[in-house]
Image 1 (cartoon, rainbow, N blue to C red):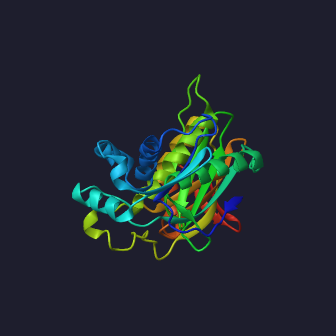
Image 2: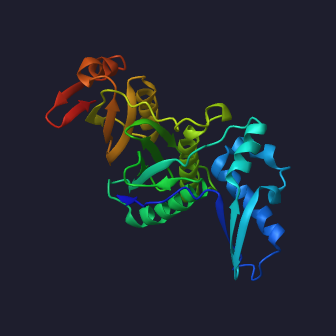
Image 3: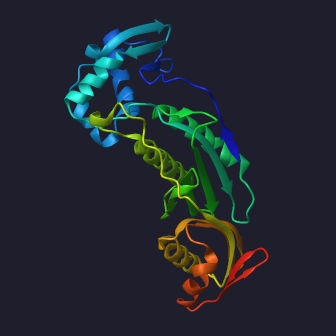
Length: 293
């Protein structure tokens, strides 16, 4: 498990530019022009940023501090808010605070430390690009990745233990599975960030907080009889679609069987046995959780 915690202030209106690779810094006006899209990425949903392509970057400039092949471009906060309000565009009035963690497991349930370090660093960079602040006391955002084989994986993102984002990749010849995983995780991070978007009419209010269920039930589920990947996918889709299931995570894969961690809004003893019975299977509760076959 990798996690990163830091104290930070809202610095979204300051954009750092690095021209080391180019070997030369462009003129000041060009630097400000290059910095503006980075500001919009932090404040405005991606689907609305095209509405700002005609904005003259220098009109929003507060100051710029060049130093060698680097520059810090500072935009005028009130001018930016006034512009977004005048165009009736949704935006994020305050930086989203998160405490991010990441766990990756291979097909036999072992953690993949090298992959965790690589992808975790990329998540941190993406969070900064999206204007997020990472802090210990912030809402917990947990990513869980389970490799099903060499090219297929299951990934979930859970915010404060509820309303997870879940996805299993669709791999085809020629695709890079690791790149797919990186793209999916970046997209999930943006989806979480975008829950803080507000319109100018409520910009003075605090960012919306997730509605956490009053009671959640977490239990272990061992399912026998999943002999093929297609059988596993069909089962996981069916159970995940049940309105009582908040989270279904494959934890360990055996030959013909899989162990899951399940989080539900209703106690499993009330309904789980009947759910499996409707599908021609049996389920019973044991000392270590539930067994289905």
